[in-house]
Length: 581
Ligand code: ADP
Image (cartoon, rainbow, N blue to C red; front, side, top):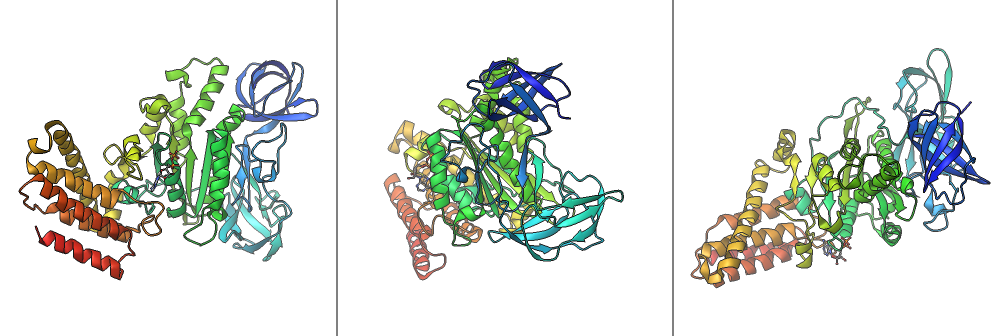
């Protein structure tokens, strides 16, 4: 018998219920108002009182209204048919709904229960299996979707029967397993709690290889690791969306999950419209075929907003358990933190900095730590790479969400307003941004072996050129063009050369949009080769002219097919220009 309760207090969508039995933290319940059942989650319990946050507006709810507890935590339903979906944080299928806005108390089925999938068994009768073991596979939008022993199954099991290859719906029994005492039926669907990480892997080593994105300021300058974490604070109009699209399209990932948490409604509508339009450079078809969108707008109740990032992460972990590479992009984690703040304030908890919950740091850190590269029990591997954006109010990077995120995320991609204003895209600041993965010995080994010997040293060298150029620019600004030695101009122009040839990249150019690592290696080599020379100039104007010419040709080079005839011509021009000095 599940616990029941009655509403005794209502503060916005926080409801206090007097309960008649045990309830657990984060348990799901339904508050019934007439014909409408409103989903809610327990967030605090004191004695016989449960504080539940309702995922809907509580308009018209009254004291005495009944509450029924479900006996489980907030869960997502997992099985074939998730890809291409647009869900809200409670996994309502928004595509089947009337626009973005749900009717109160309406919950939709997350998966199509009538569709038949071609199942191929991967295990045999008599095999020993446990939670996470792959029983079979269906093809979901051309990706293999493994049907696994549900993660709620504790201990070891033996397969007693498994269906032959054929078409089945998600609710058909595809295998029966026995734990020695009883038989258990397995279908293609399972449920996972969203707020607890499901640890269904053998090992979670530190990231050791990079995730190529084709974006030079990422791969060359501040590489993201497969299974790594990063964050992007960006003022409005700084190119966040273009960058996210580039990552989604180009990153070396099988599955893209986009969590749009609590942005303004029109921005979420943009995601609805823009994402399905994106083409997949890998397949030539639509990117949506291997994308899942989880979105909530800030006019949805605060609790539903909070759930969306967890739902998105859980979907990622599920696909990771199939041995796939998942890239999870969350925009923006600040709105998620604001949702936490609103709830915490309603609970009248003692506030931390800027009225965020005291444990904000721990919440953010726990969340980021769910990303990662994992070795599965069957020897395969999978990963969830997480990149969140933060939208600090007034661009203040010292506020608690940004600070807490900075402590846990290993990469930082600072989108700078000044760079966006001067149309230097992607506007990622090369000095403020960093990738801590560059310091990992395993990543250094990986780069030395897969890109080229001493690659990390070359990257450090080019960063130093940028830094020195910035210092020189400051001096020139203060003392005037004639007030500094010509070497200052030389330093400045060398950093401009790296900036234009490597850092700036036109997301809308067919060729420049994505640079394979082989080409990035070539470009950095070429740029460093130029920068290492010390041509002598009589005056700063000659210095500027020399580098401006080179920059122009290097830009053309970036727009040309790698090693094509045109490309070779530009290489020759570069060599000639250098020879003249
Ligand atoms: P945000 O999402 O931060 O508000 P957008 O991503 O929409 O900003 O970018 C604003 C504009 O900046 C784009 O419409 C585009 O014109 C320009 N832009 C941003 N990134 C690039 C890029 N890599 N290449 C070319 N143009 C860019």
